[in-house]
Image (tube, rainbow, N blue to C red; front, top):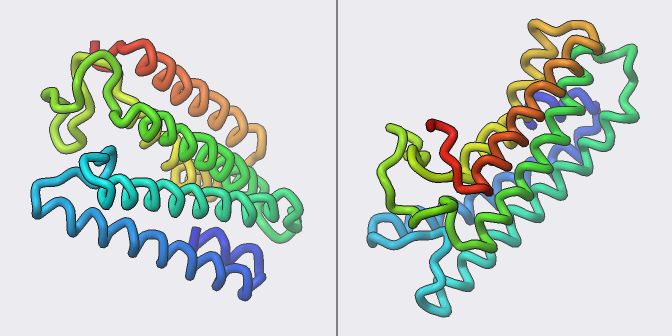
Length: 192
């Protein structure tokens, strides 16, 4: 967002957004960094009132940031198309939409207090990311959906210069991510 928000040429709004990102990420990292060395979950931890409240506050903070990301995203629909290359502009627009949608998909995990569908979260997973090899894992769609914020603008900037090209790629990308989500909700592993 730091890179693409500069395209809005509204330094005050970009600064406000940047402050919000820093505050939310700082809070999230403080909670995670405090919980992890003590062998405790930061997400889905409702074992005490304090931990449940921290988890709730993390959800409120990230929801606020997601909504706040959508606001400058709306500005890109009004942006001067003559000033920003068309493929890049459409990559930004569609990347922000997918980011917002799949950020809120994280709320499904929060509501279920887990990310695996069909088994407990502690199963053996794919190296590094630990996505479940045997059951549905909501983190996969969440990961690819939120990272559309980087993928689509970059592709629009460097590769898909024409709007139809980035729009077509974005449609295929979003269909695949949505398919991954529905597969996970049915408890089916992406790796089977």
